[in-house]
Image (spheres, rainbow, N blue to C red):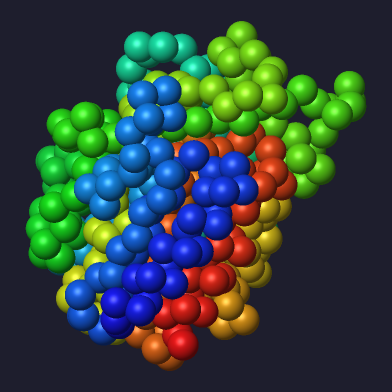
Length: 370
């Protein structure tokens, strides 16, 4: 890693922002070396505040990898058994006798989804149980183990298992089991602990008028979140920082981080600093085929997806929450870990503001591998 890499990353991020992204922050590291960082654009468009390396971004579903690692740390300590039925922890959970604890984090539970139906009521505080109740009201439940189907609901239940098994908050356990062992001082579980809110980059959301009156599926570019009555249609970017409550995301996506911390996290995870190889194998190598619109995720593990960047197979996660998109990946052959965070998003997963970071990440990884 060199100063030359930093200069190349800077050019890549400058070009990314020039295409309509408000702000971006990236970090790359390899094998325990020092992270190389670059930033571009604005953390707050209204006030003209530039992005700095210390700015925090909502990392959305990248939170799931931290939660999965925390759950496996509990399993390693004997506090949780991954092959136990979920009914052990949730006696009233429908089909809970056929859903294993590990299914909560590998997207094979068949549980109904809540994300697209969550009302974005300002100031509303969600409990994990209220989220689960919403999921079962909003969508039908599928059969466990039929397919890998993305499940935020499974991660909410996984967070509840961690709390029940330890008598501690999810935020407290992620800090104790992952953040502190790896020395990550710029990551916070915002639903369960205070964080420096003045360092949070403002989120900017694109919600243009739909091109057709017909309701579109997510695959066709339909809107991910329930925005009617919350944000009007507009070709202009709108501030969405406060829309999706941290308590509504909980274990499925409540964390805020810097890309430096996220690269350090992956480096520590794959470097064996959280647990032995047998536990990492359960996260990374027990995978099922999966595919989601606007993503590169092709096989689902437990908190890790197999994807393809810069023509190479990588393992990691991506996240999206109104006004923010995040991506973190590890390339095993080279030992390179990288993360890219933006404060611009869209409800249409096919929009450049929602998925344009993939091509930018290709360029960053290619520069790191050069």
